[in-house]
Image (cartoon, rainbow, N blue to C red):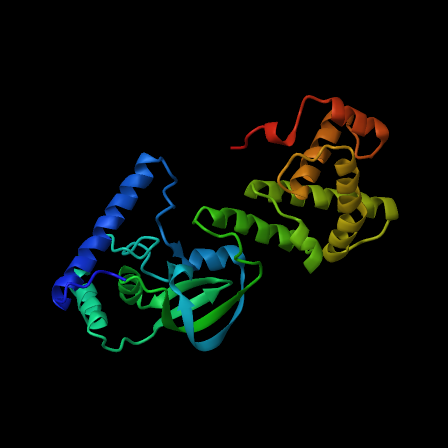
Length: 289
């Protein structure tokens, strides 16, 4: 809890000055550490929804929300930083009035938020969130509306993470995997989702050519996962060729190396022998623009 001198007006003023000082020091620290620009920027609601794909919404009503889960805003992303510290002194009077009311024990109306996964985005009540954090509170009352999205918000920390989520959403549109299968396909580089989409579609095209039948995307996705991805990952794991963070990254690397070395889409002992002896690994793949 913030220190209390017994003079609420003075304490409220000190609360604001302390938050402004922390915001400036945080920005300076990020610059000295050469951190990405989005480290201290709160998440913009519209960009998050666009990346995840909006399916609908439902009103949840009044809830108690953890302040640590309030990470974004609908339209005030430049007035406060990621920890809702004011980025300027323009709202000082309003901020201090709210802080004074809080310190005097006056009732404060709940904020309005959108919920996406475990994340909350403020519609109304940015100053109330900022004051609550300044006073060391852990929770806040909020009227919550949940946004249902096509893909999960898990793993989103910074604005840059939305790029990977956007690529993943597009991948799942092109390769509509079932729930269990989609959870096993994870990539850390967003562009890899585009490459994997092309690989799956090419595999599906060859399958249709071989069987002389048209298959829809869902069928291609299912058969690719069951007949290609799972067996290949098991084979590559047994061969000791997985050195990547995820199985999908290992699969993508090994099919590219297979074709580069053998000029074939087949899987044989010769392919594995060539892959083992090749002076290449997933960690040395060329960087992409």
